[in-house]
Length: 464
Image (cartoon, rainbow, N blue to C red; front, top):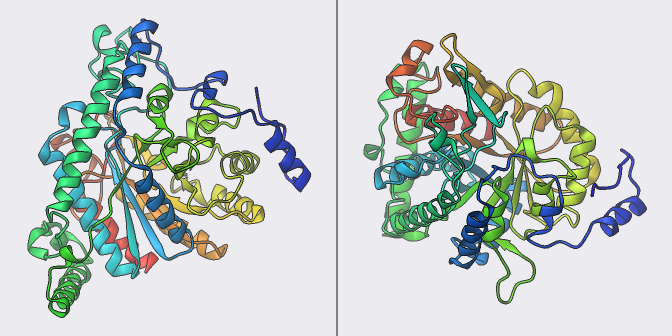
């Protein structure tokens, strides 16, 4: 079943008709729609057994955490907060270890501290982890040296090694992904409760990259000012800043594997509606944001705040329809539109989509993903991104929103706390030839520790 055709100038009657036309929602109603990007399992019985097991396991997050995040996102949409969403492009089951988790948490906390200082706003911290185990692919298959196998779709589906056995979708990996997500969340909560968030002293920071930057003096002033401000607050209050208020930290992942998401979708006591309790803020990827598709059908019934990726293939009409389906009641904090165009496309496409939302009268949180639209291949066939392109798209996004009277209230980045060499540029001036030094991503290139912190410092020049 598809939604009603929609004209650009929809009347109140049209909108009411659309609502009446939508079928009754349930966690399984998506199964009546075409579902893109879903793996093909050989053993349907084994898959059903795993999904049933997942549906009986405890939720990973709580409904009150979800509602608290929704309130904060509503404040960000009004310019009172700033959203920092970041983490791995795709998590790895074998890298669910304390060092990896701590390094990701550390860089996001340090980035947020820079943003708090520069924007004078409270920062919402949402990690791309504890569930980012599924990835969309441009093709169902991959061919190497004349051999064709199923594409790697993330560690909850199959394995990255290019063998027939590794690429076979395995339902048991859904359970492994749930378990690793639970372990990750447990460790993050323990770190934060234990004072790990007290990272305000510059001696905890690796700032060697600053000496390579033409903005070195500016960065040094920023770090010194942060340290001075927080020490002043500690002296005034007589306690450590980390003891004043527990740091809020939320999780997100792309809600791609619909059976996995369905299994963790629950009703809870004393609240109406259904919550996806595998994460606080799931998002719909650009490839699956089709108005008559299974993903939009699934997401429309959730009480969670949700993200929607939009880009060059998102037409004004499609965005208008998505808002009607996913955001019919204009609930504060419900929708975050994450635009991902690329530096060469953003000026061409974003203004028209901003105008559509303004004309709808609905409130959304605008967030820029400057990573995915700027992916390119080197001459040697290595996937990378240029730091200058990432920064330039962010700068263009701030300018477009300012010119249209809207607020860019967040940034969505793929980062790691490790010093990998996957994106070129930045203060150290990494080149294509440097990528082989420490390229570890199985899917998309990430900003390393230095590039991530440098980007946060540069964002404050625009958002402050």
